[in-house]
Length: 228
Length: 258
Image (cartoon, rainbow over all chains, first blue to last red; front, side):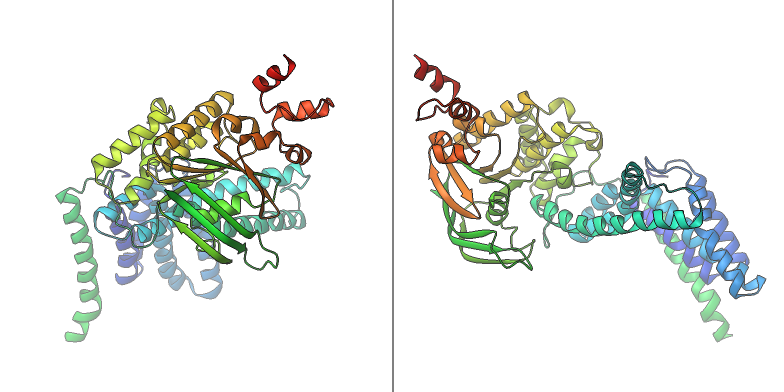
């Protein structure tokens, strides 16, 4: 899957949630969620991304809980499946799409390198933050703070993790801006694509099919009923 | 031909009352290696950021005075890991990131990247993932990445901090080579012993201002040694209570003994 053109991965990850919300609930949502969850089980995740399926399920689970508190069961199922599709698609996309390939693909397609980098940096933020959080937890452990124990102890540990994580992430933004300027990534540049990913005709056709499928679903669901 | 000219430049970081650079005037010519020495906080790194047109443009703050750059500059920051693009699978791609941003044609990018990798003795690492490199290797990759952009003015901030002795020797030779190619080099370093052979001029910074400018002999000057900025030989000579003038290098010390 990771060898697919980045635009194809984006199209799949975008069209599944769109179809989940457009198609009638709960069947549409169930179908889209099933496809998205199956995608999280396919091989090809980037290094460092393990248990993509589990991550997707664990991220979606709290939404089900909140929905159940707020709505009846049919509504919970309808919205929950749609949210699960969104979460699973996003988790799968982050785990599968190489930011560097996205930049190359976007630059080759004529996009601004700065915008491409901004999008790609969003995708790389998850592993970067995970690694930093791990380092901060290790550092806090060295200073005697245990992330285990009762709720109070865990809350203390969470505060000791969250504050440095947020502050260091903000500091990193400054550092990255400076560093990228030194590497020539300034607004308005025309970057030379080094190794643009191949974009076979079949994949281009698939992307168009996904787009047209979403449009057709929209028309079938919302336009046709008004005409008849 | 002057590559960089600062005329009475002062710089304030955002939300600070006192300037990091004060009324600083300096010229760096093509083919010249100028080394900045000074205590921590003397302003060497800030001066490099100003010379690279990163301060105040990116860092924020306020600059007064005139800064004239004749050539495109490239700066090697002291922490190489922050300068990684994060968008490369291999060392070759990492080094090519900058040249690609300059919009050069692919054959020119390949030529510059291969040349920089050779200069930094990185050819054997070309296909390695940058995330798996040691600190010293990473520092060499970043230096290669900056040189591959073919800057006319090369700015180094503690470039040998992560290098082993052999790596540092390669770097100092490379800096002399860059000067012979006509590039202007401005260098901030605490590796004072290397400067006798590397630098054409020494600029001593103190509290953001130029305290003294001279040939590398300045590093054996009494005032610099008193400030802890002399070469090892000069410092040992002084600590031994031996007479002035202090020798700059081991060779100078041997001449004095004989």
